[in-house]
Length: 110
Image (spheres, rainbow, N blue to C red):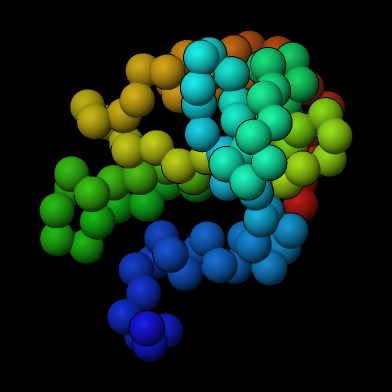
């Protein structure tokens, strides 16, 4: 695939990976899970570093958010969600817990 065919979201994910955010996370059973290792993390074991919002070029329904996260064992990675009405309630709830205090003392890395 040519670099010119990549979406802005894909380009940003590659840039973030070059800054160490290489773990892809998902939400499963109210916990964060590393897709690579299968490790689970509760909200108190995760720091929310930043949120990056992307909008589709032609369709507002293509909007996404990349959450930059750091786990208690030092894994840096991303959690991706749709933005707006298509967003995941499970991801929203997990991220809200991070915003309410579990992500205190965050370090900016990007």
